[in-house]
Amino acid sequence: MAFSQTGPGGAPHPVLGVLGGIGPMSTVYFYEMITAHTQAEKDQDHLDIVISSRATTPDRSAYVLGQSKEDPFSVMERDAEMLVEYGATVLAIPCNTAHYFYDRLQRSLPVPVLNMIQLTVQAAKAQGCTKLGILATSGTVASCSYQRMCAAEGLGWAVPCEADQAVLMQHIIYDEIKGGKPVDLPEFLRIADALKAAGCQRAVLGCTELSLIKRGCGLDDFFIDSTEVLARETILACGKTPVGFNL
Image (cartoon, rainbow, N blue to C red):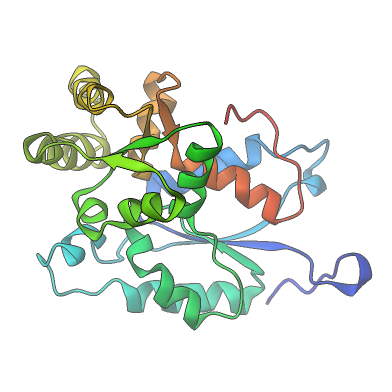
């Protein structure tokens, strides 16, 4: 059964569809962040949200890197269509790597899909950043999603060296965060410091798993959190007022 409310003037009542499960904890955090940062005095002031959290979606990085032939797109497309059928008027995908499929997915759907990477790069630019460090999965780095968006917005960029990227991907993102283990914060900060030394004014937490480091450990203003940017822009896109963001 789909939401069928209408807003002022007969316009469709905003309903957020979250294409999640990639990964599961990031989806939970995104939902929590939206709820915590929406100006509301009662339950009914919050967003109407439908969430698909298909944890069995094939690994995005493995596909992008040619390490797997399991294409995540068909799963993502089917779940996105189900969200729209249920009544979603706008979609958000709290997974940077999944934005490799953004253009294909947007073309296949009748509702707008927020572009997390574009919104994050634009937010960095609005803060005066001219060179952005990219901390992300190896799939996101290899797809050049952030690099292309930086170029489109007139920003320089830098990524970790090959050895640091391998540590970030396997040790920090997969073994520790996805594995539910404590994060090696000094090693993460060492990798980020190398980007700072390369002239980056900001570094994007360009993997929603990395956003969990900020939640759990706290990070300074050198880092711009893609999950926070997406949450803020999602609240705005659904006609509500975001509060409490330091962006």
